[in-house]
Amino acid sequence: MTALPESLLAELRVLLGAQHVIDGGEALEGLSKDFFWYSPVLQRQLNDKRADLAVRPGSIDELRAVIKACFRLGVPIVPRGAGTGNYGQCVPLYGGVVVDFARLDRIHSVDGGVVRAEAGARLGAIETVARAAGWELRCIPSTWVKSTIGGFFCGGSGGIGSITWGGINAGDNVKSVTLMTCEEEPRLIRLEERDSIRALHTYGTTGFMVEVEMRLAPKADYEQLILSSSDWDRLLDWSDGAARNDGWHKRLVTQFEWPIPSYFKPLAKHLKTGEHVSFLLVARDQADAVVASAAAAGLACVYRQPLSDPPRPPFITDYTWNHTTLWALKTDPSITYLQSGFGTNFREQFAELHRRFPGEILFHLEWMAGGIKFVAGGAGGSSGGGSHVVVGGIPLVFFKSEERLQEIIRVCGEIGVGIANPHTFFLEEGGRHPNIAEKRALKAEVDPAGLLNPGKMKSFPHNPFEPATLR
Ligand SMILES: Cc1cc2nc3c(=O)[nH]c(=O)nc-3n(C[C@H](O)[C@H](O)[C@H](O)COP(=O)(O)OP(=O)(O)OC[C@H]3O[C@@H](n4cnc5c(N)ncnc54)[C@H](O)[C@@H]3O)c2cc1C
Image: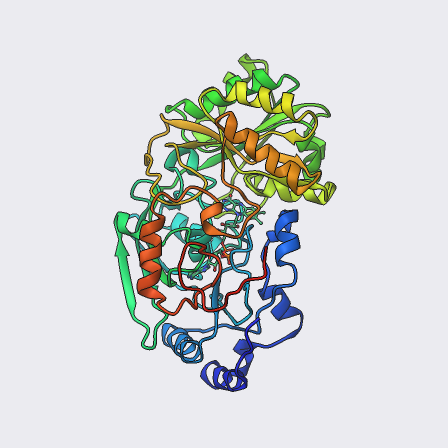
């Protein structure tokens, strides 16, 4: 931990007002954490990490003043959205100041199919405003109600909508990002179009993202469907075909192996014991055709509910992507997870993993467009077309030991299953970053003193708070 200069607390109180400076108690504890506890490895490494202070600037000028004060004193600073990240992205490794973006949440405009918003704006609020104007977000995490657009860009990768639009970093999804540097005199830097990729999924190490522009899709009305079968392969064949059917407009295709559905307690009355299920969001005017196709394939439609507009629960998305792991953990705290990308031989890969690790892995599959990986970083991909669809997933793992987890990851590598390791807080170890040199160069430009979320970008040569005692 750094020893925080005593004068900083008083200075920040004057700058922001005492009510926007949190210096202790449960509130500070909460603002020092995210959902890293999904991982038993990160739980061990991060559970005792705390910020010394948290602040909530209410304007860009206040943010600039906070950065100047921390820079002058050489204090670590960690940006924070809603704190729903899974890899300890916004957990301060060396204490210091957490900057909570909760008050920097203005949605400036939805214009010409582009939303322009402050980074702290919640995706749920943006989706509601966009829909009222005839648009919808192209891709959102399953935490979309709560999480912020800045946190999604800096810590997330994709989710609902990725079946059509790929991940955040795909195609032209991101129009621009504006960063504030961490310097004696903080500057604003605007990165446009594909250049903005340098700042995506960098865990708040490459500047404070203050404003973003994201392209939208024309809105559609959706039907929420759950299809059920006791035959995994029958369901898999149909779901894979549905995911690749460009004629059906979709926002979600997800499949769960039994007993994962048994973890979804609120859905218990709809789900059949022992049956695997697929969750879909499809255009409402195509839902009859989709259900008829499923019935012809021998699948039962056990749940059908329109998605309301403006969005109001129930949302089947609450069970998909990394929400699945949360439901599983509520039932069995020994469960953990992996994030995987399967090959075109995914059926053989599933069989091989079941053979090598019997009873240890449960499959949760998510289909997405364009070869999009779980991390940003130049993976590219398609936009607006679902013809090139890949099978990814967030399989559940019954945790035995860290060594066993590493063995599963190693075997996945051997058989060609790509893993974005969720059991590390190092950016570079969490997934593929083919443009890491560009990200490092951006950090050197915007954070020359290495104060921004120190320790997360492992390959950045300058960490003033080393030696780390984290491993
Ligand atoms: C139940 C559950 C389900 C999830 N499902 C998905 C999913 O479907 N897809 C997915 O991609 N992720 C998913 N996640 C992870 C996470 O919810 C998303 O990535 C989410 O978008 C993060 O947003 P946040 O506002 O909570 O960010 P935070 O967790 O607060 O921050 C994430 C990272 O971004 C940095 N950051 C935040 N704001 C800024 C800023 N303004 N400037 C610079 N850096 C900043 C932080 O320092 C941190 O490193 C899930 C997590 C949980 C717990």
